[in-house]
Image 1 (cartoon, rainbow, N blue to C red):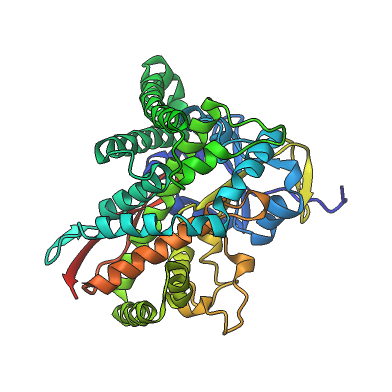
Image 2 (tube, rainbow, N blue to C red):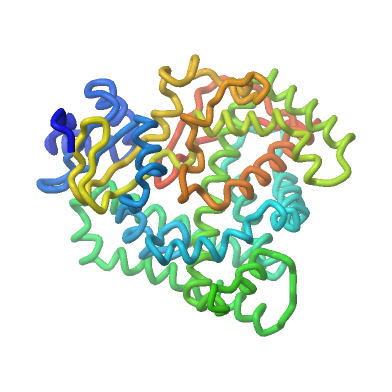
Length: 445
């Protein structure tokens, strides 16, 4: 350790308590004020003994997620709190267990494998987009939420799972997430949540969803049918010793795919649609690109490649409104970064939302400008852009999500014109960054 260590600025527990009500609704303004007041890294006391380090330093993030990632694990928020609802899948697993699962599942999300799922993805998107109501003002988030959940369900189970059960699964995952948010933002009420049986009721609800997923997996395994979907890939995957995934682990991974696979995508699509409504000239440019791409493309993969600007639009939407707006880690051993001493078992939360809007790294960061992601401009944005995380734990489904979002925005804009939105975009920060009252007006083209 170097001799020029400095202490991390601290926000006292009393200040946290004073703002507890506001933090429960939206913690971002509270954190932003602390960043502006104290600098890019500060420590927040959330109890008499507990504290969390918050940072918007992208180099610190890369140090933790890439350079010294072996000394860092995901925080108990994921490995314990979220895991009690969704199990020990890729999102919540750690150490050797995570490495084993990642190695097993990675091939299913290779670009070549995903090509097999594109038509299923496109078909599900077309059905959901067709449900959009025209010539009236309505909240578009439920449409994209259903769309993303249907895409995961259809690419996992082909046509075997009916809409009613998909909706039941969707309701269960969202109800469990809301409960988890209450636990995380009101830690002083945990004793009551346990004593009243509230946590147990939610865990039991998830147990019912697990039984549904296991039923479909068992039927497929016993039938011997091959659908070429994600379920086939998971059932066929083998560890190094030649064994298949145990049933409980299979259900854990499927539940993680449902939870992580629809949540972030539906949020990103809702924000993208609202931004397109605020910028008719960009919406028109996407429309023209999609129209020309349809004429030039012979298959869905070539169509995706032709929709380069549409992808830039989605990337820029995720810069302004990153669905995974915080990344958490805990260090196994004492560490030091840039003169800061990090005690063993320090909880660190990196604010992707702050990094993506920092004027140090982004010119006019509050402006929606998809051209900043144009590869021909040559501006390297990847150093300070983390919509899917970074390092070995980077989201395994990033390609799946991007394909789905490009298909969805392309199909939306070629079929509908979105009326100019004059009102500001509002957010609801839960486990992910959700839109609030995403009301838009659609007309058929």
